[in-house]
Length: 214
Image 1 (cartoon, rainbow, N blue to C red):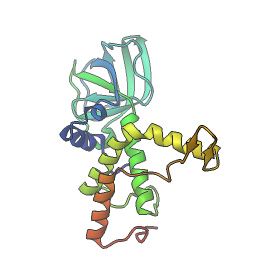
Image 2: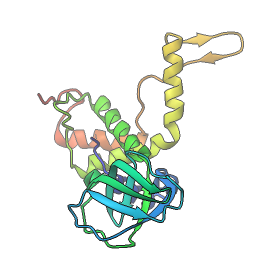
Image 3: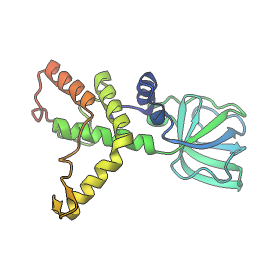
């Protein structure tokens, strides 16, 4: 679960010219819907795959504005397949599918960035979660802060993970005559996201760590 959907994050990224984020989950694979299917159909046929057998389990199929997650796939030939899907994934709206509608295939990298960004916000505000509930889920400001953090993580997550790895294997510090490393302290929010969250907390009259839900 995350504070923002990929659509919300994409809208912000486009407004900021962050095109790398917008395309970060694109597998450069496309296909076509083979037949017509209702908005509730969970088994769909596709053909015309531009990359043979290019769809993997849990990939996302973008058809119009809807995302469908693949939960099972069987290939008839390397370029046509039968997919079992979850409709309306990531808070998108399920719609009827028409024959030859274009399909763009995406992976879960952007979803994962938003999940990590949400976890960073939870840690920053010291929230107590219950059954996966996110404080201020659906709040536009928090969704924007999450989107900002996800965009930030696209270029900084690898370095942060490396710093955490070094910290773990060196017990927090390492130095010799050539190299000195001071690993990052905790998960860092993008400054703009931190400012937005601090402002939101101030407006609500809540200090970090004071809000609990159980």
